[in-house]
Length: 326
Image 1 (cartoon, helix red, strand yellow):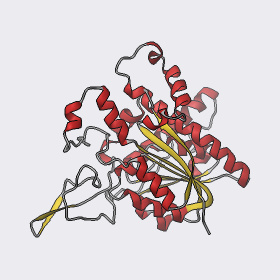
Image 2: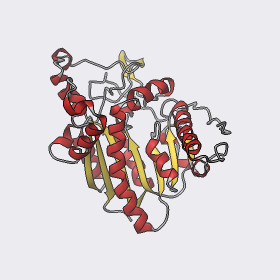
Image 3: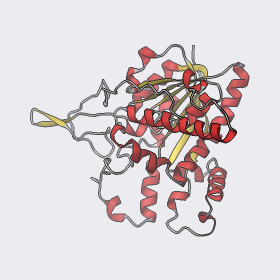
Image 4: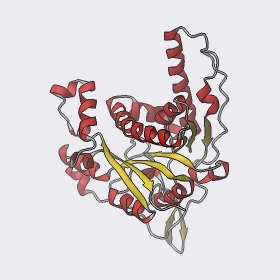
C-alpha cells in the first residue's frame, strides 16, 4: 500500500497576497477574519484574511464529511454535476478540463479525475490537499485489494494526470494554461475576505461554453435553524460571532441575492439551483425515516431542487454558464 507520495510544496501563504484594509470596524456583514488590527489615527484598521483550514484538517474531515451531513452534501452535488459533465463531454467529444478552487478534500474533482478528465485541484491548505490525496489513494487500494489487483503499489493514472496547487486562488493564475470547461467552487465564498472578487477570476478562466459549479453557505438557514432550536438569545445578539477555531459555521456568509446579482452582472445564465440539506439539519427529533440514512438521502435528493424547499438548504448550489463571451 506504500505509494511513493511526494509531499506538496509547503504552503507559506496562509492568507491572501492581496489582503485589504478598511477604516471601520466590521459589522456582522463585513469581510472575514478581522481579529488582527493596526491602529492608524486612533482608528482600528482590521487586516482582512481569507480563511485556511491548515491547522484543523482532521477536524474538518470529521465535522463536514464524517457523517450523514457529508453524505447528503456529496450526493446532491454529485447528482447535479453528473448531468452537466455528461452534456459537456458529449458536446466536446473529449475529456473535460476541470478546475477545483478551494477544493478542501476534493472528493468530486478526484472522482472526475478517476473518470478520465483533466483536473487541477487547488486549496490554500497543504494539509487539506495531502489528506485528500491520502484518502483517495486509500480508497483506490481498498478497491484493488477487493478485486485482487496486483497494482496497489503503483500510483494510479488519474493521480499522474492531476495537478495539485497549494496556494490562495489569487496566486494560481500564473500556473494555469487555457480555459476550463468546468470550474468547481464549493464552500469557499463564505471564507473569503473579498468574495465578490472571485467572479473576475471565473471570467478569465471559464470557457465560453463552460459551467460554473458554485456552492455556498446559506445565511437564511442559520437563522431558521436557531429559530427551531430556540436559540433566540443568539439571534438577538447582533454582535454574535462563531468561534471559528471550534466551529465551521462562517461568520460572514454571502446572501443568495448577492450571488445572484454577481452572476447577472458578469453575464452568467443560471442553469439550476439546488439546496443541500433542506430538512435534515432542522430535525432535532430523529424519528421514523430519519433513522434510515439511505431514506434521508433519497428524500434530500428529491426535495433539493424543488421550490420552496431548496431555498432552505444549509448550502445552495448554483450551476451557471456565461451568456456573453467573446
